[in-house]
Image: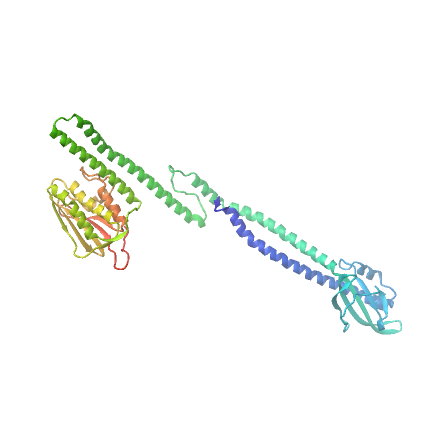
Length: 463
């Protein structure tokens, strides 16, 4: 399972192991410093023990010889040979190597004194101590000088550090293996989730029900929501294609029938009538196709313009354009404009299309008793309102679900069943709403859009 340029398992592995590696490196440096300090302390104690043994033997044997135990001690004390030089009272050479390492350090008091010097071109650790002794007939200060090569100490410190480093490396290797397999086991629910997602297809958009850790439950919920939306979208597209094919089939058949019979008509009057019928059928088909495309564009929230316009002006222009068509059907038609501007933010072309569909709906579905259509703009509760009323067959608020559904028709008529659906989509796109209002006679529909406030955006409502 990958996330970006590297796998999630490798990323978690590095995130966990990198700090531990840094800590182990710091621990290694600390252990090396501790090893050097430990070697220094151990070797200094060994050097002191050798010096004390040499001083004791010199006092006992009056400088004649060292005991076998002392010789064994100085031959390999603490892992390295000990060199020594002893002078008796008056600075007289007693035993040991002839020339000790030179040093400018003065010996004061009887206690041991440590220093660094050179002996045969090698750095050495030197211990000098003095005490009052009697050798033969002479009594005075006996000075014991003992030294060891520093290289021996460094080798010992490195050995201690290497042991610690080997232990740290073994622990880190073990920890790396544990972390790698631990992360792999921890990611197993994600791998199961990956398998569940991989099995999904456009034909299988069921919810994912695999158990997952709480850290990724939000992702699964979002994914399930997305799958649900995709499933709903696919079903909506399938329904739209099915409905569109069904709705376009009748106009297409009518066009074909009229076109096939037109050449056989000889009477001029009859032929003219058939031609007008053919033109009308073509217009209806074009209108249906246009409304279908508009509905699909609106479904994805697409609009051509986004500007502030006066709803009253758009409504007045639209009513003026449709006035002749309404009057040609021997219907009364009136428009009452609100005296003040009604500024609305959005696409005036789409809003005009919605108003046209409201008027067209009244014409197509008003029934035989329809005699008048009126349009009015107003202001209510901070919203710009356009109201279309007629005295025809009538609609009630209970008809809203069917009326605003695609191809929904309460009764057979000349309409396509898309007009009010388009109005509803335009209202949603502009943050408004459309309602079928209660009416004692006829139908009364209102389109409400949020009014743009002075110096700010329009107050849009959802739902």
